[in-house]
Image (cartoon, rainbow, N blue to C red; front, top):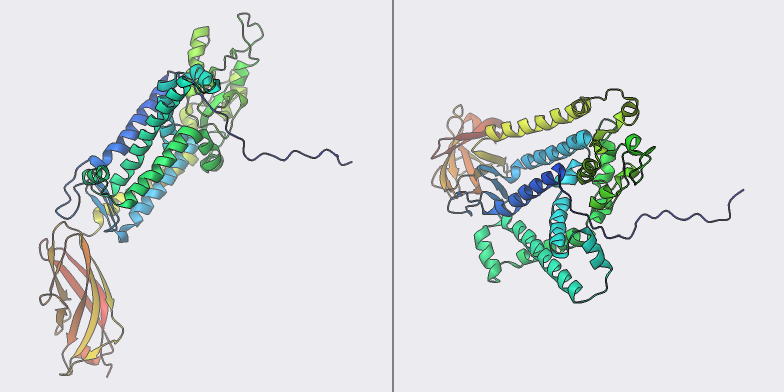
Length: 476
């Protein structure tokens, strides 16, 4: 018989409950501090590293030149036709995420994700202004008064300064950082710079200050994708229920497990979850609950590791029965993770080799088809080609155009050049018309199609490049 009681629809979104993580010390907290400092240092300082780019470009080590459609990374220069390098790096990033997630769970989310890094920084400011967990809870619940207004405004101003610095650092990657900074301070910078800083300031302020764990739970797709990357061999954070239960407080612990139900693991969690409830989508495996639990175990004289990085495959039967557990390295170095590593390394090697073997001189050649050929007044036959020469050097260079050694009798002329020479400005691609003429009565003029190779030589370095094409004759 069908029930008359309507079912409560499943809630797909839960309103945010404020999370006030307590300060904790330990190995994983120290690791997070180091990673946060290094990540923020790289982000904020990289645009200010100087690198000689010649007279036509900013002397900046890392530069995204949108106008010239190029990317510079120290001595590496990526042009639009070399976008496969960027694609390769993106593939490596994806494979790296698969590798780390398969082996160690969501360590990217817990330690290096920008949302985690900036949220950690914002929580640090919040703790510095308002106090630790209990003080922040009291401030949250108390009515608005002078103290609350003062602390909230101080915190929000510091958050805003961090957010502005975040947006400002981003735009410095796209042009000369010192020059743009002066333009920003004197209100002479392009509006797109101010607009970009405004958007990134707002998102950093909102995501790191207010949304926090909601971004990880609802906005980020990775918590759902990572389920397909993890299995029973994956090392993740878990609570050893067989050892901790039944939990309870008090000195008389007869019949109780090691967990004293102090809630230290819950109080330090930046996601506001209790790891003792089992594996959860919101867990970012940051390890802070391990630090808190280990500290408490030390105080009560119990062994560490009640909460730890472990493979779920080994829990709880093996531990409870006292059987030996597979060493952690055997969980990490297994066929699945080794396959990800081999693929990741293969792409890395291919990109490095590609950087070293790519030619310094790159040209393109396209015959013009309308008309296919032109008959000159003296009966000679002329073909026209569009030749593209890419000068990737920091100075203007002369380039000389010739036909292949096997082809004789052809006359070559460059439109807008000095005979067979064309001067190409620094860091540009020049497209010119090249006229190739076969004398009247020659085989090339009479034949329908004659193979032709056009060479381009760098007048300074001597580098050469060629493209094969055909010379169209009358076919008579």
